[in-house]
Length: 443
Image 1: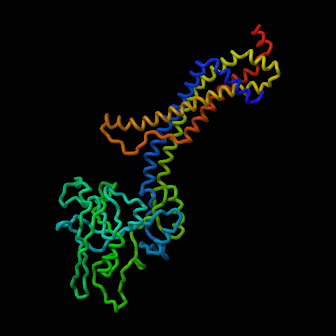
Image 2 (image 1 turned 45 degrees about the horizontal axis):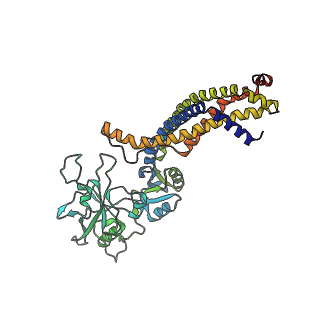
Image 3 (image 1 turned 90 degrees about the horizontal axis):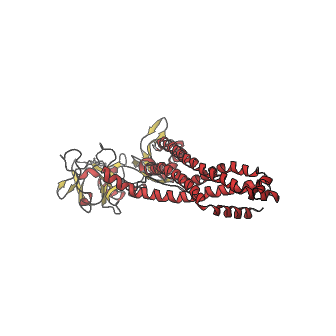
C-alpha cells in the first residue's frame, strides 16, 4: 500500500466519527495553546525588560579609562586613539565629554542660568549613539546647543521639584560670555548667543543633577579661536613668537579627550570589541557581561514554563490514546482484511501512526492560532486592566506576551511527538489483530 493510499484511508476513517475526532483535536489544541501562551509570558518579559536594557546605551557602551603607556596608564586619549577606536569592527560611534575650562556665565533674558558649565560633545557621534532627549532635537548648526534636564530649575528650588515643561525652553537664546586673560593681566570678553534646540533626558540616577550646556565641535572651535587655548581655558596666552608653551587651538593633536565611550552596534558585540581593544592596551569597563546572569534567569524561567505547558499537552495525550484505541477496536475487520490480502504489519502500524500524527498536527495548528490571538488580546487588554485597577501606567511598548516563531515550532514538535507516542501502543496492537477472529466478526 502506497503512502498516498494510506493517507486517503486515514482521512476516510477520520470522517466516520467526526465528533470524537473533534473533541480529541480540541483537547490537543488546548494543550498546545496553553503551552505557547504560558511560555510566551517568559519570552515577553525578557523582550520587554532585557531587550530594552540591551538596546540602551548604558549596556552597549564601553567606558575607556585610559591606555597603557610604558609602566603607567595614560588617562587621556588623543585624536589618533579616537580614530583607531572608530575603526574597530561593529563600533557604531565613539563619544567623549570634555568640560569647557571656564564658566561662560550663561544668561537668558538678562538673568543668570543655573548651569554648572559647558561640555563639548561630538553631536554627529552622539546621534549614532542615541543621545537621550526629553524634548527637541540634537543640534545641526554651530550656534545650537542642548541643555541639561535640571538647568531649568532656578537656584533655591526645593529638592525633587520638577522643572518647567521642557518645550517652554526650546527656541530660546542663551548668551555665553567667553573671557581671555591677556599677558598684561587685562581681560578680553565676547558674548556668543546660542539657540536651545534640545533638552537632555532626566538622569536615571535620582541623585545626579544635570545642569550642563552641551555644545558641539563648531562652537568649541569658535571659543578656542577667541581664547587661543584648548577647551577655552581662561589663562594668560604666551606670545606666539615664543614657541615654548604656546598651545595652538583646533581639534588636531595634541588635543586630549576625556570621558571617552565606545558604543557597540549591539550588546552581543560588546564582549568582542572589548577583547580587541584590550589587546591594544586600552583599559575598559562595560556592564554588558553582567546581563548574562539576567538572561540565565529568564532562560530557566522559560524552560520551566515550557515544561509546565508540556504537562498540559501530555494530559491531552490521554484523549489521543483513547481515540486511537477505539479506532483499532472499531476497525478490526478492516485490519483483518488488509492482513488477509497481504498488508505488511509495518504498513498497518504506519496507518494508525499517521492518524495520530494528523491529530497532533491539527491540534498544533489550531492551538498556535489561538495562542497568537490570546497573546494579542493580553498585550492589548492587560495594560488597560493594570491602569484601571492599580492606577499604574504600563510603559509604552511593554509586552506581557511574545511568541517567537521558534516557540510555535517547538510547541508543534512537542504536540506531534506526544501524539505519536500516544498512538504508538494502539498501532502496535493493530498489528497483532488475529485475521480469522477479525473476519469472523463480520459473519
